[in-house]
Image 1: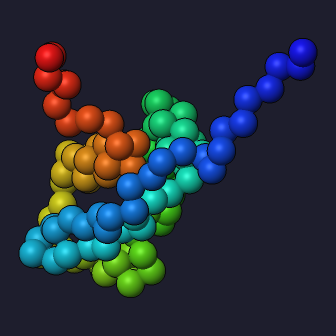
Image 2: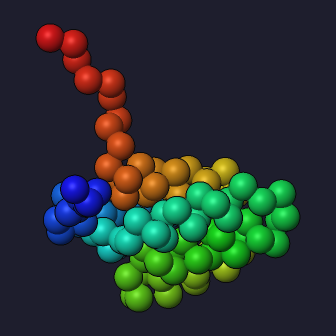
Length: 111
């Protein structure tokens, strides 16, 4: 008997909209992204190279933000009056990664 497994339609995904606010502006993200994008981000983010880390963040936001929000986000991050720290950008990325990986926020309750 040959070894074979059918993975069906690729897995269950939550297609609810994903949004976040920064400096009072709302940004709309794709409800789902390819798992491959998450894997690439995780693999590339382990680099000690600051330039590569910057490219990873840029690639991530380009993958998740819709076109209008991406343009608005880039404008906001260039505004000298509305500073967004690296830590805040990291928090946004971490939250979005949790949403896209659909990881449980709390441990399951024992029955």
